[in-house]
Length: 223
Length: 333
Image (cartoon, rainbow over all chains, first blue to last red):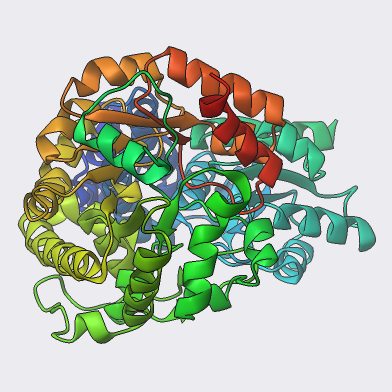
């Protein structure tokens, strides 16, 4: 099958992007199916369609036009499209920005912020392994080793649980992994100064900033 | 006037030139609880320890904040969610959410006899006696929106506000009835004041309109059932977009975080709602020095705060000297 003509290609990509920021999973299904039927490259449909829509959503969130309910619904639309397109992805076609292991620290079960960061990182092209909540140091380290991760991301929403971040960085030191793996942290009570204190490389105050920080950390590593 | 009378008079709107301190959210610290042999996790369950812990902050620092319980899981546990007890420094947490549909969910009839509710009510009776001429005994009831998020999971509820808004409203109605039943039981056991704590209905997660549609009507129902009771509403995070709606909840006072300036808050809240806050819990109380706390406290008073408090719950690892500085801010004036 040949790739679709330019005008139709644009219409499909716009439709995919719109379906995400208009919070419409049915529309995402419809345009993902059209992408498949017309032989569009699945990676292009995701990257230049669905992910572009998610960037619009991210901007609206930063401007306080969208809030968490809209973000969750947009993610649902995007994932609906991705699930349909996934079987058509050529594996080597993905541009891989880096691998992140992310979780909320041990003793803490807050997940909204961590999930938003994971979503934004995925949208930006990172491979993200989300270990959920209440995550002990050995689980972070085990997964990071297994996946040869570039970054460990930790979230905490309580003044008492955020102290656990230092346990993880110390364990990374002891296992001789600290040189290879960058550490970023976030969550309501966390600050730049606290990040330094617990031995993390960087702090991010919100999801969009987390993407920027992750990109910088990977760039540093390469340089 | 003793401390209790002064706080209650302030809540009644009998203004004086005195500076008044009162924390309507949780104010226990690991250090003070240890000194009175009432550490977590036992003091969440044992009524005597619960009462000793609740009274310890005022005893040891002079900051009145006799608020029970010390977490936001009391209702969720009683409604059937499995709980992790927490540790000496961390609170209990809900570990699993119910998968029940919103319309299938029923509040158990013996709800008030389940989980830790009987222990908390017994602790209130003990405190009503021991604190009679000391400080107000305060019950922290969880807001309907926050209970629903604890029981069903926050993401499920937040997404449902778009996908099945009417079902969300029906379940909020049930959670408001939980709040009313618990408040009435606490009043019967002897509390002086009630704080409705609705942290998930925060402006960090919801727009002002979403708050007004899905959280406020049910806070209103609880406050409507508490006519004549000195009440506060506490919401975490950035609450400026919510503030225009706060007066219509029927609360007597609003406790908010330092993400909103006291002057702005006073202006938006209007004359009918007292402003409570706004010493930064992490920046000042946990990580700052007594001088930092004093500076923030003085600024709050200068900006017109009605009752000085920590902007959110006092961080459990706060040093007692920092709380003493907060008490001093009222005394030395």
